[in-house]
Length: 327
Ligand SMILES: Nc1ncnc2c1ncn2[C@@H]1O[C@H](COP(=O)(O)OP(=O)(O)OP(=O)(O)O)[C@@H](O)[C@H]1O
Image (tube, rainbow, N blue to C red; front, side):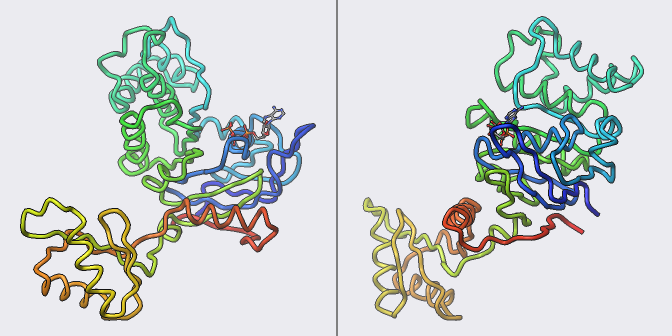
């Protein structure tokens, strides 16, 4: 089942092509839409909400046509815009109740849903204070609450971690993940930071210059490499923290393995089936403990970098229709 289906979508502004024949299907769950600033993310969201017409191509959201059924889409989809759009003199409660009423909820359920939603986003204590005195993190939460208050089936979150410090970012990412898991609401979340989406998304769509670079499940992006990451420690209180690494590294190199140190870790080529056993046995022989031994996984950043390089040099990048998401 597709939540969003996009075919040959193109948007030309007088001086720039923001979307260039984009074709992608997105399934349920949390989907990351990744691209550098200006890649076309916000434009795509506006077209999917029926707020802007496309120049060519077509798309459906929850099986509704974006060109002709915008109001019905906006009924069922929540939208957290990128830019600040909050009235400073209103409290979070007043603003979110207002947005709930605008979505057609009766007064009593608008108040009830507002209280529930503000509690869910962690703004319950401060809900009667004017928004003008809120921190950036609190303002992002108000924007998130107004996107959720009418109980949508899908939400579009445009750069929800913008302007947040690392702790605020982590909190916001946790909240977004819970929207997908606890509430079963599908999420399309944009970011120019691949690393953060890798942590919370079931699938990732990467666009560059309005074109699709890649679309795939996060698990496919982060598939295992043929490199074993090992961290060894000495059981003696050894002031030289890399001594254990060097002893194990040398012993493995002597046994014919390709070993590269990286900080306190060793990167070992998994050249043979018995690599795991040999590392374990060698550490035991040297009386070293292993605190970590795992197959290294690709980071989405690495794949993005490779694809972007191929793109720029005219190399082969996957083309045609892409489908992401759980069936
Ligand atoms: N209304 C508009 N008129 C003219 N050009 C526009 C308009 N809206 C967007 N653009 C241009 O289209 C391109 C894509 O913009 P868009 O805002 O969709 O990118 P984005 O990926 O969301 O980036 P950002 O995160 O910086 O907003 C940019 O070059 C932008 O300048």
